[in-house]
Image (tube, rainbow, N blue to C red; front, side, top):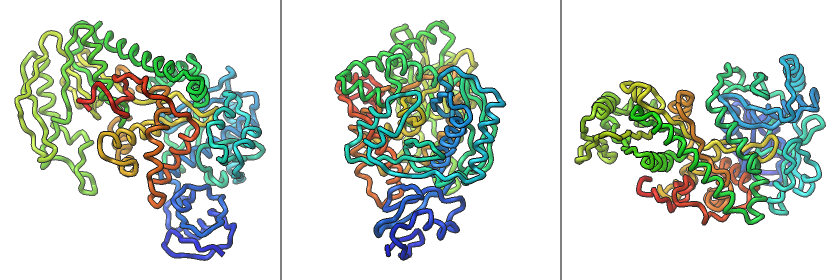
Length: 553
């Protein structure tokens, strides 16, 4: 018998070989939503895992971030199998998310009608109704190479080659299909609820519920500007021959580190210069630039590089920090838990900010405040601003795209720029690198380098950061006049060196270890790159150090 420390703190006896699924039945009453994943000594595990030794066990439920990922992965697997069974000639590449939907591109140019989608939907519903099991096994990477057969990117074997020889790969079977996924799956399809399939561009949009209400589907809301940036980035990755992690590994192993870095950096410089040209081409119409994006998008470096390009065009960029327009601490709104809510729009003195915008655009000289974060009081330290003839205000902050922030400035006199790190890399046909994960690794490295915060601390505050993004940034992204993707196609290989040791230092007995292990499992598949060739004005330098703009960080 095994001694298992359970979620209620009690030590209970279970027979050796008992699955986590069997144990979870005794503790489901402690959770609001279905249990979808187990935790064994801090590590996330499939519910099908057999217990073989004394350990501490916990569980993850559906309405958590990790549980939600399990749900979406399993729904995608269901779709892939149903598609293969009903239309085996279709080649699918899973690309990116738009809201609560996953875009799956049809690569061989076949159009699926609404009747085809209805057939696929019925097949999925049948598997769900029958609670079709997803079978979990672990095999050596050599066995996996023989078993797996991607249909679009034929580079699963090179991807697995990056793993240590003693690494065992989790393989999942649904009906007669076996696939390799990065993360646990549901034990059977009976957990799945609402979903929808929609025609979108040259592919299919797989719609799913949000984690707060996993059995109810919300209407799909298109984001055409964001979708276009995704498409451009994907096509660029293919054009240079680097659409997957395996192809990036091959670049690095072939000694082409500098080449891939130079190409990626040249793309950034070219696109930033085009934005500066667009601003200059308006004559003197654009007097205000608003830059917004989620955490770790590289807003600081982007703003500085754009300013340099503007100077090349004869303009005089004048930075204006929103941080200095916070309301005094005693007037700052609070969250329901009593903490100060510095992220909400109400934390800013909009009246003062808009008054200063109007006066600056009218040619006046304005005394700029300084917000003392230590005392929570606004001070004046002699800083003044005046636009002059060629001056353009550059404002970078979380609410830059929200029209309420700059409502006094006419649309013709300002340009809103949304930036984010939208990675074009995928592992294979259906395992992609999520934008959120790439930003999280950026944040972990930067916090360690510059903010005296270890990886555990970053993971602990990340849910709060994400909440603010979902509430104050993403809803306004389509209001941007320009979108800029700050991702660098080589950066995943940089994190092998910087983020991996930080994540490995996280102890097993904390809840955040699950996220750390998930990120580490991704990094195991990439080869480390020599980062000496990264230029000192690169957005990557904002996170790993030695940036020419470090005084602004």
